[in-house]
Amino acid sequence: MKLAKRSLALILAFICAFSALAVAASALVTVEFEEIGKDSVTIKKVNGTNVQYGWKAKGADGDFIWGDSNVITDINGSTEGYTFKVKNSIEESAEVDVLAAPAAPEKPEYESCTSATITVKAVDGYEYRCYNTELGYDSGWKSTNVLEGLRKDTLYSVTQRVKAADNQFIGEESEAIEVRTAHREMFITKIDDCTVDIDYEGSVNAGETVSFTANGSAPIDKPYVDGDVRFIPYQWYAVQVVNNVEVNLCSPSTSFKKVSDNEVVKTTTFDTSVVKVEKKETAKVLIYVTFRKQVYNSKYGLWITQADKPEYLRYNDFPVGGGKSGLEKFTGFISTLINYASKGIQAIMAFIWKWLTQE
Image (cartoon, rainbow, N blue to C red):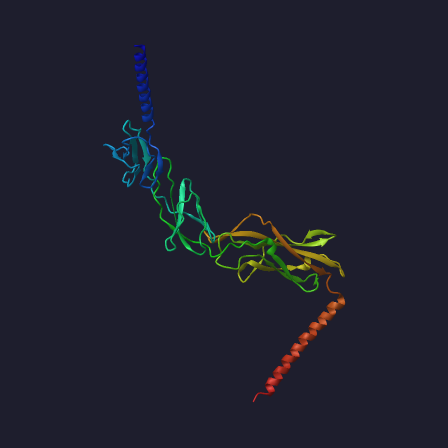
């Protein structure tokens, strides 16, 4: 009798335990998404028998639409979103909402490009796509706003959309912008490529004017591309070296003349009358030129200065003598007089010859 009671008790305990496990198992039926697309969702498969996956428009009256497949497709039409449930032979899950896809945003805003990349303005929560139908190229959706691995000098279409967030459908795709990648790599020049050339021979006499050319540096190959770097002449000034100390001869000046409308190469002159030098002595004069660094931005079609104050300096020097002696000046005067007299005699002879040879 005692054995029978014990057996019955064990059977009841086993039944209760199995029931508890069954209840616990049924409580694990939940909706978990493996993927939320643009117009479809994939729900993580649920173990058990008679498993069904259901959905209906969010907030709509009526029953759920049930099916055997955990991949639910062709969901569209609701402006709010959809509600999903899962059930098996024991229990149904709680309802889980997925919000409707966000509307298509504005077109991407172009920032820059190189021969192999296109950069659009980054927007939080957006993703980007680049494609060329003729080439059969499609980058797919990227989280980065810098689209890489492109062909040079090639036209691409670029779109954007809102990323799929937790329990939200992927956003609608924007209209495309078209961007042609650069035809070459960017040109990176250096300040060492810039020079200051002074036009003089031998020595300059005090009081004479010398001319000099400030040669910046820029890409020769046009059209310019994003990231091209150039240096343009900005200011110049002159100093005299006295006992190894530089003494300013003038204030910084931006007075330049362009060479053939070239912003990179400019000329000007310097009057050496301000140089203090004793006769039979020679002074050392330095011409300093500051250059401004600029980077090309194709979005605006402009060269953008990289600093408010020029930080790049080049120079050249030349000697200045004390001027001509009295004898040199007299000799120069006689030489000039003879030169003019010679030209006058030549003109008179030409006139007489023309008169004599007239018929």
